Length: 236
Image (cartoon, rainbow, N blue to C red; front, side, top):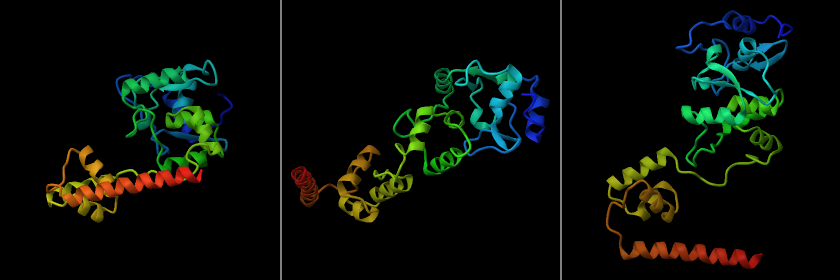
């Protein structure tokens, strides 16, 4: 560590490696990534501020795969308190994240999903950082970062069009106005069956009782989907 250099961020870390207060976090005052974790530049390279602080305060990691883990759960807020940092394996760090409620999550569960801006940031970081370093920045698995780098994950736009909060609000508004599912579908620009299913998932029902015509339209939609599936099967 003695040959790291004498940058502003590094000097700040040296001045605070004996920070005495354990009861509150020490927030990194300089540049932070979009994920909230501090970055220190030194000798033309960038390093993760919390990892460098862990090295200064507790020595080198037992193995290169060990991560600088936060006991406070506030790594995403830029905490670099040396008393909150310790070396842990990736699995131990993920267990801590789950206990702190900071494990990556999405509407699909605990696996987590990256949004497009994060994917762009990861691809930019791949030019100057290792997969392990990026994985620690984003609280992800190193294999996931490798799959992003090779194009196995997130290689193109998602084919699934997920429901947005704005569309959910439109459905609620349509129900209040007494629209049928067919009328909702036209206004929102989604298939009627999709709007129907989404409304029921939101705990809502159509604003007026379903008519014979409504049921017929759903049957027609399902028949068309079935016919399309059969044609695709024949073409194979």
